[in-house]
Image (tube, rainbow, N blue to C red; front, side):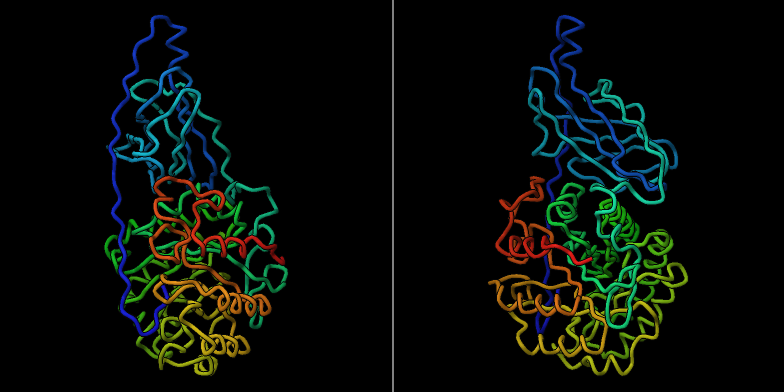
Length: 467
């Protein structure tokens, strides 16, 4: 989240974890009645990328009595593990995994169904499934043959990645594989440590298919309860979100969301480790973009460039063609929020690498004509990517200034500068697009659960792309 002469914004999320208990179904009198009253749980691999897959269980109540809770148990073969999951609780013992309902989806009335999903890492699939202690009986769908790219959830050829392929920087523009200058538009997650329940396969289906977003920014905080507390967990979360974006044909920005300390060199060792693994795993993909320093602050451009000169080679030895985004002085304001150096300083001493763009952040209710003039001047000299902005104040809260925000977007449209809005969550602040409670309820479709800023940004993402 962009800052300008402000204190650190802290946020948190307390998640209520509900352990599901097995439903007791009264034993019918006949075999035929027993079969009719038995609920089923059927499994499908929604997409498969060879080294992993997205799985989904559908629990259907075909009986005449309401189910008030459910529990699905199954085994995975050695070498196959569960990563992130959604719409369920999870306990695991070795290769046995037990998923239970959440507080809001345990009741399944006759004739209805509920779903939950998870990411599997490895080639295997669930076996020995039991629903509330009984055989799942719904069977499994055939396992798809792994392909080089995941099966998209929208028609082939119609996704942003299918239309544009591997991106590159040509002059001061972001260009597609055919050399055409393009503009990407999309959304950023909030911090994964707080709002991972807002970025689920269901919500990303809405983002890709209803909102028609081109890009998802995966915001992984380094401090503030993020990466440094559990590098393995947060790296795996990013892996999973890259796969989810890929399966939906969106570009994925991997955001190393550093804020405090403001000198990116303080986290240099962690960044090397993280980006080495991310680039190793995803080097064959054509949709991954690396944002190596979210909002440097309190340091000059020379320090930021020194960091970039050390991190970019880590990526390049593994992924030679990907676009890399470099944060700019004073919370990625191109120096407008302080004295860290403006566009002229960066242009006089640019990062010496191909396919590099420079980051700009703004919040329309706080960042007025001076900031707009700064980014306008910068666009004449530098390739820019706006990886974060809001229509409200720099805190991500307060009143919206849609008029000022539209002036920025008009500039970006004319210059084909790509942008990403903050943020795709139900945080209480006005900058989060969903109303509070939306993510727990899993209700993302349409506009009924959107705040004023959410409706505004959805309309602007949905306008036709010029690919």
